[in-house]
Image (cartoon, rainbow, N blue to C red; front, side, top):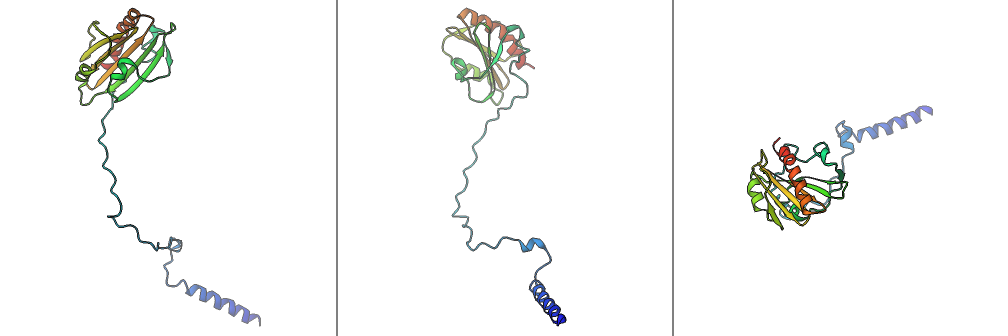
Length: 195
């Protein structure tokens, strides 16, 4: 009798194996997802994606923001960058860098750098219209164009080189102090542009 039980088990095993005999010996095929019963939508039913918007290159290859070591003689401390105000808000929105600083006196220093492709920051600078009075400071070496605007106790130096426009803005206790600081900072910003 024990031989009959072994024969039954062997027969069941053979039947089980024969059910798989027509399938390839590949475990991946045993776990494939079942074929979906619904057909995918036809290409005409699927809306085409919108064409990509042209992008403006805003890459600047040189470090143009003033650093703590550049400003060591100013005695400033790093501050959080806030929304652009005054002349800085008039610049194109292709911003590649911003920084803000505080003087111990409470005066502020903000810098915004924008890219103007293709290498026409000088023309873009001439198109910037800031409120207030335009001032003249000594010509900065290595830049294509420059302007200085003061509105009340805020003065902004605008410097253009190739495709980069750098703006440094100082708000102080008086217009005279802001303009003095702008004159001191202009050569530093120009040097960064010319590197």
